[in-house]
Image (tube, rainbow, N blue to C red; front, side, top):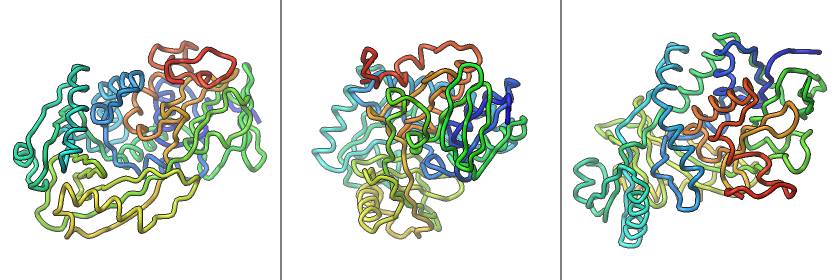
Length: 379
């Protein structure tokens, strides 16, 4: 069977974002997903757009990509809302990073100093000043940093909106259709489903998240070294006057309040393979860390718990670019799938349409892990 579509393996935030970007530029696109599109790791996330809060000393290239994606988010959100006819609940109140003891305050001060050296618009707050901004914080907090440029969205609304916009624009979704292999070919690359169906197209994009390495067909040097990292989370529901104004991030947990009354609390980081069981120990760790910084959660009802699988590459940076003739890889976004959604969608679409790898993608080449190519700054 021959299909002229661009074929995308994986219908998460990355696959849906790329698919929507391509289909609204007039290209036929088919997305294959092993389950329901949009119901993987990004559905089970918190929707934080935290480029500044998650800045790491050793990840300058990833930080630059994150800041660029953050810059694109407002326009991306408006376009997505217009196309889907629904809100994605983009919120720009900023984020509070808090310290609950002298040791965590010292660590936060080092992070703040580094952030200021990078020119970030962050503000140091005493515990009392933090409490003025966010009355539900623990009164004994040692210090805080306010990051005004770190925003949030409702990740589930984003995924549903992107799915709707993709289909409205003519995209084809093939859900419950796991792909076993990709077939590189400059003229007619293909995918082969687990049912044995072979579909040829113009370009194949591998965006299967934590399952990307399970898809066969790529040479070892460019087969994405992606593994699942388990993250457990808790959903609380506000049933009394308890209105967090900001995302709050502490040493052991974060809280992300949503406009519909949910408060998402997370998250563990566990090397447990494809295990998605929710555990007593995981929930205890999250709740203890959250209670230390926002004790008012003690009385909130727990309405849901879950565990998702983040797709982590060997260096915890995304893998973006041409991997083989006719095959592009877009995976390994780890904790940043929603944050990096605009820049990934737009720059991978540009690669597919023009054949040119933009400067934003170059540091994240699938070939940076190869033993036959020079190491990149991320290796």
